[in-house]
Amino acid sequence: MKTITNTAMLITPEYRQFIEDLKARVTSARISVARVVNRDLILLYWDIGRAIVEKQQILGWGESVVDRVSRDLKEAFPATTGFSPRNVWDMKRFYLAYSDEAIWSQAVAKLPRRTKTDNAEILRQPVAEFGGGRRRPQPVANLTETKVIEFLQQLVAEIPWGHNLLILNKINDPIARLYYLRATARFGWSRNVLLNQIKAGAYERAVAEKKTHNFDLALPEHLAEQADEMLKSSYNLEFLGIRQAIRERELEDRLISRLQDFILELGYGFCFVGRQYRLTLGKKEYFIDLLFYHRFLKALVAFELKVGPFEPEYAGKMDFYLNLLNDKERAPGDQLSIGIILCAEKDDVEVEYALSTKRNPIGVAVYRLQSKLPSELKGKLPTAQQLSEAVRAALPERGGK
Image (cartoon, rainbow, N blue to C red):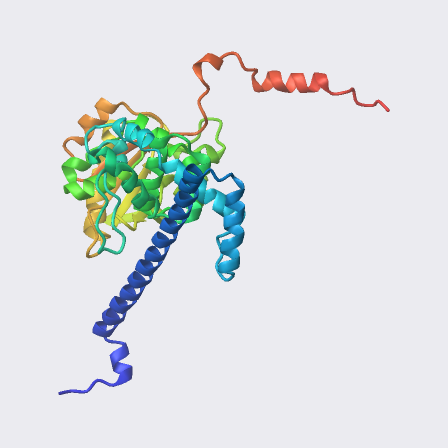
């Protein structure tokens, strides 16, 4: 049997794959341990909050007991953080927020029940598994009343305490809370990403707006659902500060200059690959406006930017680009590349007809550059010129004292 020297072993493909597998196993184990620790901590906070509430109800203890519990727990566990008066108050508030079975059963009953490719699907689907090995929670829509609180207890334990407090402090509507809890657990949102999603009205857009794509036709069922969740029906690009008509290349330049903000708006999992990404076929060159890779879909995602309304020929061009990406750029193990046409306006019927014959998964979304005024305020607010004139009139004349 031939013996391989240490130096030779380190450069063999077999050893490199071996060490990559070990690194992946270590990472998976660390994530699993961290998840178990977090779950136990959240359930501990839930139990502390519940115990305080129950004792107050049964024995008539006043509110001062919360500070007393904080002081005694800190004295008993001096090396443990998390028992400050404020945090213990939050534990009580946390439990109360999810303990009313009537409110949450009513909220579950009001969940939208639409097709599986609808934007609101995340409200009904189980939380995605991270790391494997644990049982998925039961889909919300199938829960009986007696199981609602048990489900909520499982769900809040899936995300860190800081994320729970952020949702608790920012969101009052039970269904909206459910959306952000499940989305955070499913996509692994950081606290900053979660805050950005809340500020951008992700829930409101998810339940109110229709997505247009052909993912059901071009992808297997499980991938179609994931791709649907990745795509938004509209993207908020107010951070670009654009107030007038621009060309497509200028829009692209602005997005690249604010790439971090754009990726936050796209959602968790997007990794930037390049702009004007070059593809060749024979002697001809083609360029994709923006190319990303989605870590969870394991797929290249191509964006084409259009400053005008959607045109049917855009779908054919994107289908062609995706064929090239799949043939020339897709790595072994990657899923089919996905295309997103981002335009100023779209007609849903026109989009559906344009995508119905395309082999590759393509979505069409619109972008918003500035907030829309409520209809009742249109024509009632001063223009920029009127504001400027009013300010000048209010200022004292120059050359005074």
